[in-house]
Amino acid sequence: MRRFFTALLDLLLPSFCLACEKPLGSAPELLFCPDCLARLRFIRSPLCPCCGRVYLVAAGGDHLCGACLAAPRHFTRARALFLYEEPLKEVIHRFKYQGKTACLPSFARFAKNHPLLADLADADWIFPVPLHPSRLRERGFNQALLLARALFPKDRRIAPDLLVRTRPTEPQTNFNGTARRANLKNAFGVVKPHRLKGKNILLIDDVFTTGTTVNECARVLKKAGAAEVMALTLARVKEDY
Image (cartoon, rainbow, N blue to C red; front, side, top):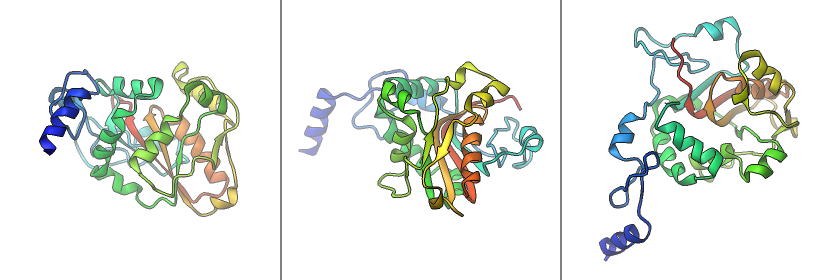
């Protein structure tokens, strides 16, 4: 009987690959076809223990990258599940800009046993990187909050209202380097800072590019009294390093 209802459900609501949209088999655990799944690149050591920068040549262990040595970060460590490249880029784009959330259960499964996430287990609070109210009204949802709730279901540490955007900003994709930092300067604030005193904070966002957003959030949180700030993103931009 169960097999009958599964077949009926597949007929009425067939599953498709999140990336290439090919039809999938019966009730797949991960909504990726074998070809697209094979192209996803999970992040593994060796990497920078601070920003999570991936060393594409697997020689030696984890060590600080030149950028973190030259300009120490306000966050302690940042980790990501994947390298930000196709076919994952398209899946994240559909999630972020089209509200296609079917990917979230698959991402939660990927994260569940990811070896690097043990580094982030000691958080007292989980903060999704906030959107400004005007951007939230335009988009209709905060993708970082949806991601946090998928990765940490029913977790009372998730607090979407303690870290806020204090002014609207341009999309970071429009800028590079110094301009990214200027775009986000004084763009975040803390509500009820007494609740952060001495606490370890885990930030959640979709993509780590240069780390400017995470770093500015961390600066504000540390100034408000947080003891440590960490970050978790779905993906991280690959750098030739």
